Image (cartoon, rainbow, N blue to C red; front, side, top):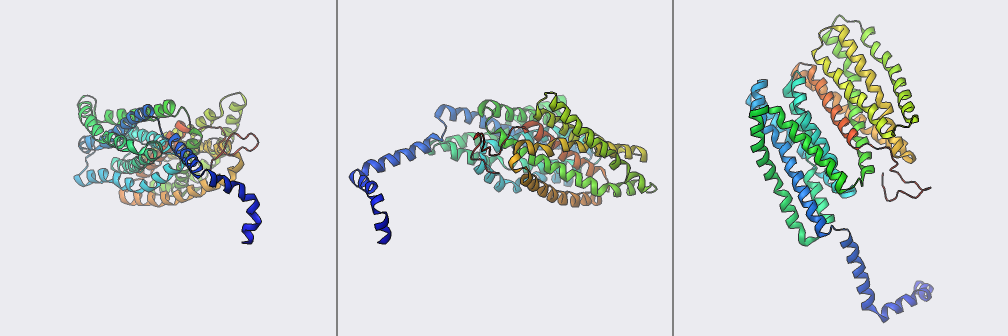
Length: 440
């Protein structure tokens, strides 16, 4: 009663107005709520466009997914796989597919399903396009194909949870059934298309062409979806995700090389001197790191776009270095091995002027905390990579499987960074008041 008496005078006018026109107030509140909910949904013309685009995306998803089953007989004959090994390659996709379903739905609910769809499509599309390269350059194709299919499963596992999240947020209840059934039919359409056109391409141009075409078309779809439907919206948040993914790949591959290179030299060249292979690569990495920093700062000071400079540095770090990593698969002499390792480690240092500093471009107000989270996750993936590399060496008896795995992760991270990296601020800028409701 004391509380009511204390606030009674301030509350009476509002209570009186509600008593006088209760229906009007309730009706007004209900209409405002209804308008707020409906304003989040697509209009019917926009929903039709998205339906067609998502149908095409699901079609390409299955084109990329079924490319391996279509081509696996030709690949098994080419690489002398047994039925057991063929089944291992095909089944590894579904192991990866299991792990990202819940995560994909959770992230989609937080940042938007369309953003997750774009990022994942660019990644699995690039992975599909690189599949023939990995098969031919790795001395153990069964290993590289098993790993690449596992990663494909991880990347494609977010597709349907993202669709569900997007549909629930943007489509009215009375139209969700038609949209989801139409988009879902893309799985059958994709299987039909790759089964027909893919079979013709197999006979005319070889199994590699099936992966190249389906992968590149998927990347093109992701780019067009972002460019023309989202009109560049959300790229800042996507770029932050891209930085995190790229850093995980960079850190895990670096920790793997750091941990296993001495053992590689001892196993491959038993008579080699430790003071040579344990010193030369790291000695040359120092001037390489300094040069990359000076080069990136000089380019930016000359007016080059900051994001483009970061991408260039990362291209040298993950792209060019991967070429020398693959050269290690066929190395027969100690001097060439030291040269290739030195080139790999020297080029890897370019990431200090690429992805490592890009987080400062995106979120200067919380760069320390964000980098700490990234490095923690990178260390965790490094633990997994170092352990898994030891397993591969013991299972295959070949170091080429490890170098192939490193190359796959480098190309995955590089493709993500080149596609989505930006240098504009994504954190909260209180002074300008331009960015808001962004949670890092």
